[in-house]
Structure formats: structure tokens, C-alpha cells
Image: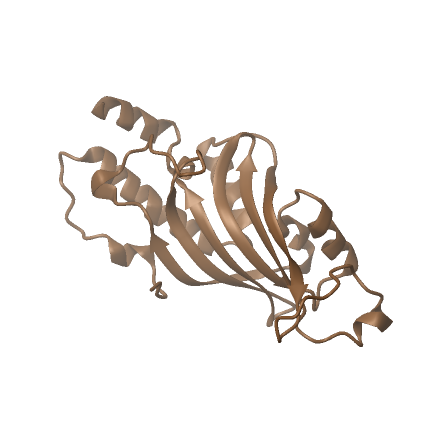
Length: 216
């Protein structure tokens, strides 16, 4: 079970001096965890990290893997098309939708995310764009001044046996860090729940690649 934690708790101070690569990757992973927590959305945090570490190029895009019909609180399916304010007032409360995406910068797969978002507090143009575009949720809501509160964090890689060339079953890089988070706007209105798995591509900037090549 995931628990509320800072990833510094998951590493012991003692590091085998002969294993420079794993030490460097462990340090990078802790810094990635702390960096992402400081941003209002994962998209903003990922872009800042990529710019700082020369990972990928261009904007971050959301490759939609799947999406699910909105549901009412009792689980029944409802029409997901945005309604006018008058029509929405008659709909059940807490209407929500699920969007599963791969976040990429250029060809680089940065993360795999599952987002459950509430239609409450989100304007129709954002709901329409979510249903029809590759723009990340975090970028779409940036103007709403979101706050992202990480409720659970887990290191996914076994650093003792870490292979930076290993791949995920989907053919992309494997996941090294998982966050569970709630996104708030307007101070204290929760609008989304996110489960996001960040990939090893975020750890493999030039200096890590150099260390890796020296170990081969």
C-alpha cells in the first residue's frame, strides 16, 4: 500500500562507493520527487525538469490511451457532452470522467497517468478540449491557479538491479516513481484525482548516460 511519504525515507545514508551509477540515479530520483511536489501540476513540473536536464524538445503533449464515460455517484453512465448552465443544474452532482494518457515531450515518454476529473468548477471549453485534444490537463487548467497535493509517493525501480535500458511491457521506458495526488482550484475545491507513473527517461540526461556507459 502506498503511504504518504517523502522519498528520502526510502534510501539509507550508506551508499556503496563502487556503485556510482546507482548512487547517482537514487539521488536524481529523490530530487525528481521533491521537484514535482513543488509545482501546481505535473505538466508544469515535468516541463521545468525537462528544460533543466535537456530531455526531449517542444511542448508536452498528452497521448490519449483511453477515456471513460462520465459517471454519477451511483455509477450509472451519463451523457458526457458539456451542458448549458441551466441544464447542468438539473444533473446529478459530482459528475466525473476518466482520462488515461501518456505524457510525451517529442518522442520521449515522460509519464503514464490516469486522471479522474470532476466537471464541477471546470468551464465548458476546458471539458470540450479534454474530450478532443492532446493538450495535457495541467496545461488546460493553468489559468485556474491549481494546487497539486501529493498524497502518496513510491519508488518503483529496484536500484540494486536497475537497468537503464530496460523497457516497459508497452515498449517504452519503465516507471521509476509513482505519485498519487489531488488537484485543487479556487483555494480548496478538489477537481481531480491523479495517479501518475514517471519513467526512467527523466533520469537519463547526459551525465547519467555517461555514468551508465562507463559501467557497461
